[in-house]
Length: 106
Image (cartoon, rainbow, N blue to C red; front, side, top):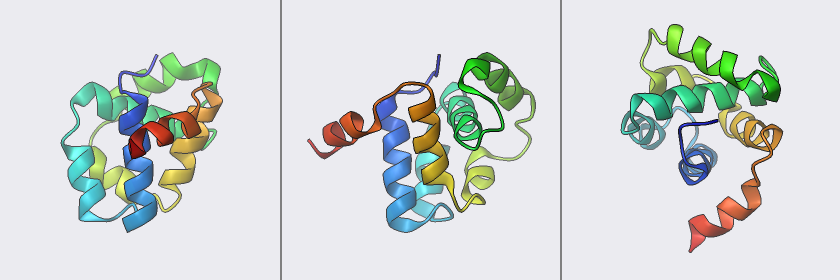
């Protein structure tokens, strides 16, 4: 299970789409997340990128924790398709992104 709320992932998706993944706004938001949330964000992105399958979430989380050498905001900021990968990752995990996006606008 991801240790980050769907709303926070959707917020990163929205910021990355609006400003670009390398934007200071995206970096600041990701940097403000706690370590577990950052690990979950990376794992979700990897699942969306198909580095791991949805059924390998536990392994993705363990790998993200073990390989966290650079600041997460720098790592994710260097991935042009960040928003798409996160959305695909949530979708693969069975999380309804559209519903979460509607709540983001509330």
